[in-house]
Amino acid sequence: MSCQYQELTPFLLTAAFAPVEHLADFGLDALYIVTDAIPPAPAPRIDSIRRASSSGDVSVGWNGSGRVFQVEKAGRATGPFLPSSPILPDLSWVDFGAARTDAEGFYRLRQW
Image (tube, rainbow, N blue to C red; front, side, top):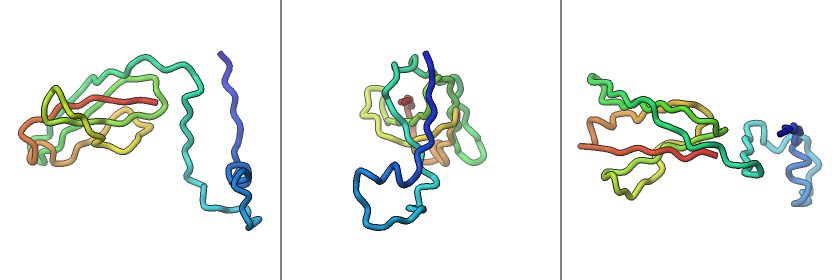
């Protein structure tokens, strides 16, 4: 499998919309593009869930070969699961105060 890298300038990204302005900066300096044009990665695996007793924070860590992840959470094992974190390029996330506000919680991961 070969990987290709192409730098996408603001002009290339917006050309299809035919912008009236010919500015070099459209404020897209923090744009992060995720594509599913490659075969899916194996499912990620949560490998740690730790509770900080003093703050009630719950730290979730995982291993996965996806490029970005999103933690979903439910009050029951059967769901419904809803997004709990933003889309992250990291392999961990902290659910601040979760142990203080929720009697129990179930986590799962999505990846792209």
